[in-house]
Amino acid sequence: MDVSRKTINELLSGYDKKKLKIATICSHTALQIFHGARQEGIKTIGLCTEKRKKVYEAFPLGCPDEFIIVDDLRNIPADELADQNAILIPHGSLVEYTGDKLNSLRVPMLGNRESLMWEKDRVKMFKWLTEAGIQVPATIDPDKIDRPCVVKHAGAKGGRGYRVVSTPEEFHEHFEGMDVTVQEYLIGVRAYPHYFYSPLTKDGYRAGEGRVELTGIDRRFESNIDEAYRTEKAGLSFTPSFTVVGNELLVLRESLLEDVMEMGKNIVETADKLFGGVPGPFCLETVVDENLQFFAFEISARIVAGTNIYPQGSPYTAYQWEEPMSMGRRIAREIKLAAKAGKMSKIIY
Ligand code: ATP
Image (cartoon, rainbow, N blue to C red; front, side, top):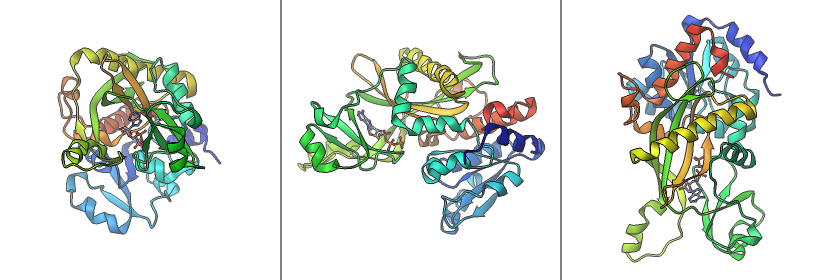
């Protein structure tokens, strides 16, 4: 059964605010989350398999203070975390592993867990984007494919198994009977801006009842499409694929920042209207075309792996904070601020 906001608020009211901990699964952005919490003086718990523990121990400053060893990362020991005053930080792996069980986890989680249900369901996600006034690629009926399209599987799979098709025949050959979405292929430069929405902070770029911050921008390296020029130069033909392998930093021309900030603000205010808000980190996946128009094809309503590029701050946090500010540290800072102001329920559900 889904856990209610009331239950989470009751759990939070029993927490010892001086002994808060930050917990997450050891994967995705965990090093950065633990590192940031450590910088802010908050203790951490890593949910980890025995096999993976040594990987985290190899990075002492990104290693959790304490491990809870589990056999299967799909099983989150929610009660044990709640007993330890822990706030769970949802990241891409946690969302993917936990699936529909996420809503029933009886442990306070950073952000609004409703927003994770909106990012997961492509119909809802596109409603969120379009109501925010953001341009999106056309979704196309498989039998009406008349241009290059990307075919996407359901869920956050890091682009795995995606393929470009240009005709209904090609679609049926590869995807017959599968749960997929067909989206117009966007031509341009990919730019994935990362944001942090703080309902608790009243200065800066106003959005909703607080402010939206741009923490950084990345672009992904996807195999094999992002090395296509080499493959072609080597005289080989290949079928493009989009499996995410890593990320690189991107800085946009400064005149585009106005659009980037407005998109963030509109996403925040539309989330307020549709499902009670998106406090904390979120990201848009966009393509900027030759007319400098942004088209967004995805929202992540949580920390994204692209933020791993800047554990010591980004070209955008440098103008907002005196100290190096990663997304992990920003999360810990907000939790401290909320605990001090008695407003944890504003940023946690
Ligand atoms: P994640 O949840 O990890 O972001 P995902 O499985 O939901 O991954 P997407 O982010 O939707 O996958 O897409 C994976 C990649 O495919 C993108 O980073 C981009 O390079 C490419 N892609 C997706 N949609 C489009 C599009 N409409 N036009 C062009 N390229 C696209």
